[in-house]
Length: 217
Image (cartoon, rainbow, N blue to C red):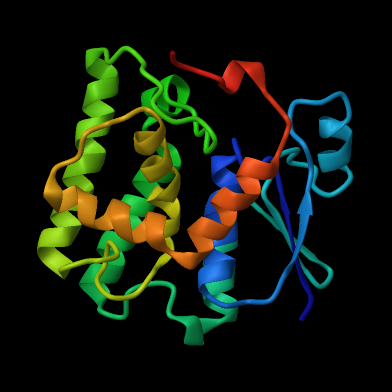
């Protein structure tokens, strides 16, 4: 089955990163089609592929799947041998819960600390509502490390939950958020992965600048 993943800018598109990591870490062959975001043609170009008007979009043969979590669930279902959810039922339920929490929450973190792979050492103000989001993420990572032992969130194997939290690792890196050792285990593992290094190298080569995503001093 042919697979094509439509993504946005690697420097800025956190949802594209999530879907891309699922496919790459699962060793699934796919073609990559990049559409630059925030240009005069962006809406038209994406609309030609998906009526939802957003990336990422996964094309599997004649099927079109959009939304990162829907893409991840579809890939897990079509390639069950890749074990993209933990095998143990309670761990799987936990992984699904924190993935859904990331998918639907953390609005302040998203808006105040947009993903920007190329930027380092940026500083932003940390109002209480942003600190609450940061603390919640740190608690999730630390609890997973305590329960499952790392280095990934649910033990020795990458799963969909790791893809969902990967952009937050990059946000914390960009804006210099200090992490306790229990949360650093996951951040280090993600940043050192071959797939993430590939993504970061590609992000560095992009020349597009989206001004409203360039946050911090």
